[in-house]
Length: 326
Image (tube, rainbow, N blue to C red; front, side, top):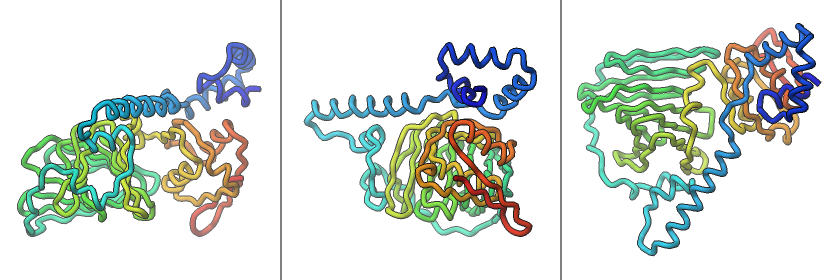
């Protein structure tokens, strides 16, 4: 009963009867009580309610659509993209820009620095102007500084940028398919080469997506922009800013996340391989916050509390350990 009701207690879905039975069962059993406190410390369901979030998105779209229908004048496609989460082709959205960036003049690189963060670790780069860049697990970052005051960062992995406002600074993150232009902001970019999606989230300030010196998308605070490498499409959605940089604070945050995506994150952090033998299970979604200091075995035990998950850990003398989930 303790394990059955554990997830309900943490998620706030337990009935009054279930709560009473649960706390009565651990009241006079110090071992069960210690187990409960231990798991509670490791695992807590986020206060962020994904269902309400989806309903809010739908409500925003409905209000927007009503406004469009009642107004026969030409509407703003840029706002439409934001609140209706309409997919746009990155290759053809140049017309969204209302200005053209200054042509980048070829200049000489005066400083070339390479940084990296090992698997299972987070590191930080402190820049001369007080800006800080955080690197997630298995991330590589190259900073090229040019003689004209421009800096271009090349990213393979995930990084959080806390950039001090400076109107004279020209700072770009080159992601290959396009660049991200910083305008004194706090933002997060996930762009691992082996992953098919590039994600950019903004907490405050502004970032622009730039291609061939042309800004084709402005990302606003609380927005998540995702670019698909396979079909070159971009989607923009609202995002809870409290979870954007949770990884640098030592937390895994999963909001209605499919198990297959969770496993990708675990593979990257723990440097392991995970095989899910059941497609239905791979699509099962979870909402949880777990400390990154937790062992992968404990993470699997935590997930097993909320679903019928069975797993096998295969320790290998050479190469990555393999975990089979079924």
